[in-house]
Image 1: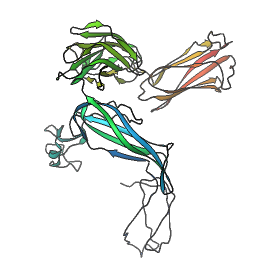
Image 2: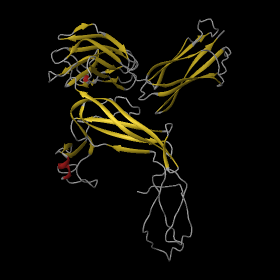
Image 3: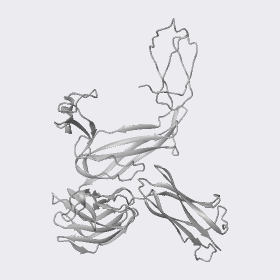
Image 4: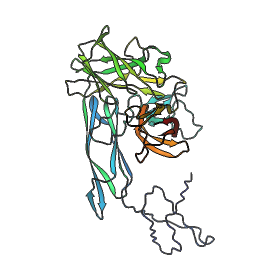
Amino acid sequence: YYLPLDKLLAKVDQNFDAVIEIDFPLQYLRFFRMRVLPDAPPKFTRYALAELEVYGRGFVPRARWLSQVIDMGDIVNIGEVNFGLSTWRRDGDQLVEAPAAKAGVNIEIKTGLDDGPIAYHSYNDLAQPVEVAKDAYAKLKPRVWPWDPPAVGWQGVIADDINNWSFWSPPIRVSGQRPRVPKGRYIQLQIQLETETLWEFARLDWITIETSSLLADRIVGEVAAVDHLRPDGKVPQVPAGTLTEFILDLRAEFSDAGQQGFDAVRLGLPSTGRVLELEMGDPLATVEPDSIVDEGDELAVYLPQMIGPDTNDELRLRLETTVYGASDQLRAEVFSRGGDSLPQSVEGGDASDELGTDQLRVLVSSGSLESVLSDVEITPPVFTPQGDAINDQVAIEYTLFSVLDAVEVDVELLTLAGQRVRSLSGGVQGAGYHSLQWDGRDEANQLVAPGVYLARIGANTDRGRVVRFGAVAVAY
């Protein structure tokens, strides 16, 4: 395999010395190639390179460290990751602290139930992968050539163990954040130090990970739409962009009378939503929660009583929210108000006989998913920005669908001839309904002339820029 390298670093002709030094401008590089071109090819057919040394200066853009598997001694919940980070700059031969340096750290963590995050596979009689121990894998025949069979006695794929280990958490860049990882006995860290400049770097001085014992052996949950509690294939499907009522059932499993239990549930919904009803007990009965607190992206539901080893209470929440992507995961965790224990994540599974999904993921029904940028509305279609507090502003409304990460959105007001009169920034926005206001003024803060204008809404997504238009009339 030949890797073409098009950038010429240096070229030196007529070298007669045994030791040759070649300098080129300081820069980042990963690969380089040296070619020797003889002056007289018919006479010079062989040469010997005794030694090659390449010298560099500065600091690499990224440095990655992967920890060994760490045994916590027992299954624990994971809390905040705290660390100390210092940034430095090389000044001549000295290293000096540089608080403003453009350097930082990304910390990822994953948890597991056994000490092996890697799964080794062989094959059964049907050529299907089967997991084997690492020692057994080393004794199998390696598959080197394309015609080597996927059969018993041959090595198969080596992959991450997704049955006993979680995925890597989203990167932690600020001390004090809590990674969203499930409980586990074993943890592994992946730390990446980054810098944007050649002479600056970041140093991780120390790191601590908060842990606590489990509130229960397991907290199992499943969700379903109210009008379809036992969907085909155990997959709840709902129309995209439509406010939908769901039922979330939770069940706690305890094996130790000393386990603390919980009296609060924190919900991460696909979009803005609310809790309609809380049911507890066996059989279930409607109860009044102590309180429901809106925590921004999450809702905290405080229960009227503790659920612990001595109770056999089931828990049901009726929710109302909207799904805007092709699929979404309802996130839930439980915690105790009175203890020092950390929150514990809810796992998808069979939480009740009445629901038939065994999971927390919701899919959007086929054909209901709109374009990434849809439902553009201008309200009112005609407005009069005269300062009398009546129709002084217009709302430019739109909905973002199927957006995995927050995207940048902007709105431009144009004349019918295409001349821009005003730009509005929506900033970075996630999936869901959004609205921007226009007061009828241009970039110079002057009222625009009466007439019809176009509102051009643009979103920069991972699939490119998506643009939609709407019309608005200004009258005086």
